[in-house]
Amino acid sequence: MKKLSTLLTSALLAGALIHNVANAETLEIGILLPSPIADVGWSKALVDGMEAVKAKYGDDVNLNIVENIQEGPDADRIMNKMVGDGNKFLLLGSFGYMNGGLKLAKRNPERTFVHASGYKVAKNFSPFTAKYFEGAYLMGMAAAELTKTKKLGVVSAFAIPELISTINGFTLGARSIDPSVTVDVIWINSWFDPAKAQDSAKALLANGADVLFSNAQDTPSVVTVGEEAGAYVFNLNGSMKEYAPTKYLGVVKTDWAPFFVASVDAHMAGNFEGQNQWLGMQDDVVVVEDWSADISTEMMEKIKAKEAEIASGAVHVYDGPLINQAGEEVIPAGSRLDDGAILGMDWHVEGVNSPLPK
Image (cartoon, rainbow, N blue to C red; front, side, top):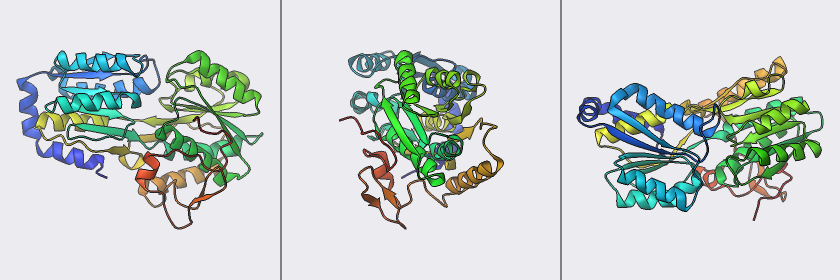
């Protein structure tokens, strides 16, 4: 699998050409998002990444943002309109935009598309995904130290491979510290539903969870519920510490700026090549921050050591042995789950109590 470094190299080799093309014509960039652009969350992280493109190119690019569009016919209609309006580079910010976006890309080979969380590739269509499971593993280690009930709760959006692998990473990290820890998951089938997220968090707490994980929720609802109940909580994408000043465990943050800048550079140079961009700690895309002061010094040393091992590639979250919910060995000791299996993950590891939705 080609890495971000490949994209960066091809863009840098054409630096002079990039400058000339950018000055010749303003690049219109269409950005389609599944949730409102709040102060924190997934959509905000994507926009922040694209703001780095704007900072580099200034008036040579325009960012045309449409937010809070649910996956389905409305999204297809809007992305088609974006093409009709002259956008030459499109950022499609949700898994469910994949099929409509790919069809559009094939009809418009002169345009470039980058698509969040998917897996389908075309010459001008690159999916990009963060290895959230790397950061979630570290959060699981911290959660295992701080839980008293040995029950961890996850409020999650959709049961797609990206989020399933993140929950599994969280569980593996926790059980590497305490094998008696278990994880319950509630799927709310929405990226942005504050009321449903809040109710789900309360249900997990009522079931005994004392650490909550807000998995791909573009709202601080889960975080505020945790703070009010005295339960530790963490989330993805952007810091929500202000909503849980005493119980914030930390954040698995994403920095999309390097990937977006490199992609726009390559588009302007005329050498963009669609490829599956799966980015993590090694690429400086996944960063874990805002660690709770309640984590012991000894545990933080263990976490930092594991973080360094993951970032260097010395170890992998999905090194065997791996056992599934049914108690079956999926990967033996000494082996590693391959990238394709993780990108298509449709099973939970041992320790996750909740079944996947059918």
